[in-house]
Amino acid sequence: MAEYVCIIQEGQEAERQKDALSAALKKLGQEAFGDDPAQTEIDWRVIKPDFAWTAGEPSHSSVVIRSVPVGLPNERREPFLRAVGELFVEHTGCHINDVVITAWDGPLPV
Image (cartoon, rainbow, N blue to C red; front, side, top):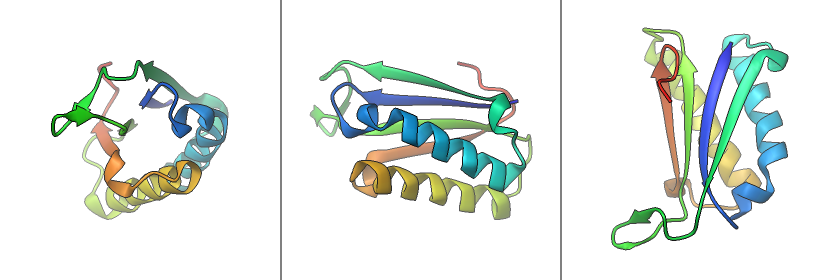
């Protein structure tokens, strides 16, 4: 089973786009790793404004953590990471620097 944890800011565009982002993340996982979208779990965690900060200012960043097979080679990892970043930019209008994406080897610890 594929797992994602997405940490987003309350009131930001990512929160309003959760359904579209979920569908698109499932599709990316299917294309990149052969995931069954019906067996993909996405845990959306919405944090309150001012609960996250970057460089001394309230953060507008989103964090996407995705489980991947242990030892996944970079040739497969990097295109997926890029695609997730582009997906968030496309759906939310955020800057690419406002998306933190991690491909976690094995099951997510969170």
